[in-house]
Length: 144
Image (cartoon, rainbow, N blue to C red):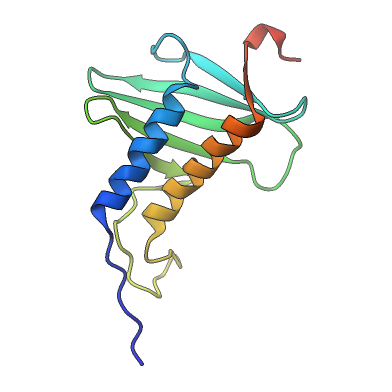
């Protein structure tokens, strides 16, 4: 029996990106300027830093990374592109992986999932949900 080929559903993906934009917009620094930062704290040991990397008239690129926390093998880090005119947020880099295809054949040399791009944006959604439930915005001067 042949396995069906993954076909992306554009309305579902755009809906995910819209929800991520709305959730992420609340966490951004007050001023959208290059090198501005915002900190999200989950505990005294786990603090994430949002850094504005690039600002253009209709887009903003930011980096989300574990700034302070327990040193593990896996240090979460991803870049997100915000499209202000469309109100969309899309992950454009995770760890050292850039440029994601909408669909990957499976198997492939990098062992990416057929819906890898969607999965990465779902990761952002899950992180934003964690921020809404357990995190709070912290000012840099109060951080240890």
